[in-house]
Amino acid sequence: MGNAKLNVWMQWVLLVGVIASLMCSYGAYSRAGNIPTYPTADDIAAKVIIPTLNGNLSVDNSKIDAIYDDLLGDDTWEEEAEVLATNEWEDRDYREIYKALDNLFRDIDEKEDIDKVVIKDDTEFNAMDEDDKDGNVIQYVKVYYEDINGDDKKVYLTIDTEIEDNEVENIEITKTK
Image (cartoon, rainbow, N blue to C red):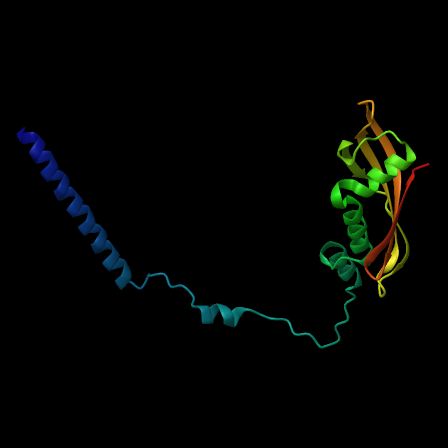
C-alpha cells in the first residue's frame, strides 16, 4: 500500500514539474521576440484592392430578367385565368362536369359517382386580354366515374371556360374528339 501512495504523490510531482518547465520555456521564447502576431482588421482592409469602374458599364440583363420572371415573377393572366376556370368547375364537387356527363352519356346517377378528374397538360388560351381580364381557357380532362351499371368508366372532355372582367361567364363542356 505504501507504494500506491508514493506513485500518486510522484505523479503529482511530475505533473507540476512538466507544467513548470513548459512555463519557463514559454517565458524564454517570448523574451526572444518570437511571439507570433496576427494582423488586425485594419491591416487586412488596407491590403484589399477594390477595382474602380469608369461608369461605362452597360450590362444586358434581359435574359436574367426573363428567367427571374419565369421562376419567381408574378402570375401571368393566363395562369390566373386557368386557376379561375379550374376552381369554377371543381366547385361544388364537379357539379358542372356531372351535368355534362348526364347530358352527353346519360349513364351516371349522381355527382358523387365521379371518382376523379385529371387535367391534361395541353391547356389552351384564346383571346386573352390581361388589361380587361378577359379570355377563354380550354382545358382537356380525363374523368373517372362509375356508371349506372356499377362499371368504372373513363371519358375525355373539353372544358371551355369564358372569362369576362375576371369572372367566369360561361362553361361549355363537350366530349373530346
